[in-house]
Image (cartoon, rainbow, N blue to C red; front, side):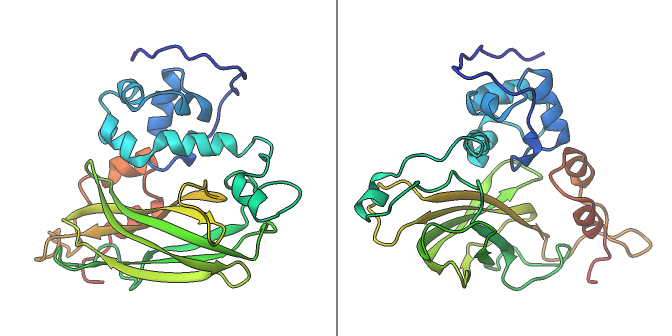
Length: 274
């Protein structure tokens, strides 16, 4: 059993949280963390990437570098913060003369939601995309169920392709602009090509009041998980004798870990060229 340092905290930890909400943590990984005594968002947030990797020793794709690049600790901190009372207004809000309560904690409750995070030109995950093609992605944001604290925000979204069948991420694009809360926004952009492999598009989204200072904290932050992309060799995937594409070599493991869904696993086994 992997060892782990003892953390002290002024607040008691909860019996257990759904750690699979953290992008990159599936049921197998969550189970191993629980065996090591890491059962809550707070316990993940208080650990180091090296400690988490030690608890997950032997599981593929769970190196300290992968955990750090996927920001497990930051995601866990945001999920834990979701359940804390709203903070007092920050300097940016005070300067703008906004009264009453400050901005809600991240995603509690959401006043903006991600409708789509995927390729701007939708194609099957089993297509024969060449690795020298630009990665064209799209992001669509729409009004959420909560009343926003302002009608207009400045937004930035850092979109990354996270490798699922190996370590590493590829930064795709940093997009941004103004979003009118009643209308939402749809944005697309092109980034660098991807090597052959299986990727998940992820985005780190921040909202600020227009005209915010560079160092002002965001009013709202959200980590979104999007479309699965398989980039295959230019010649196309190998086939079985019956004409069906072979399973992705890491597909069953990723399904067991919760990194891909049953539908996505089925797509990986669909006929090439369909």
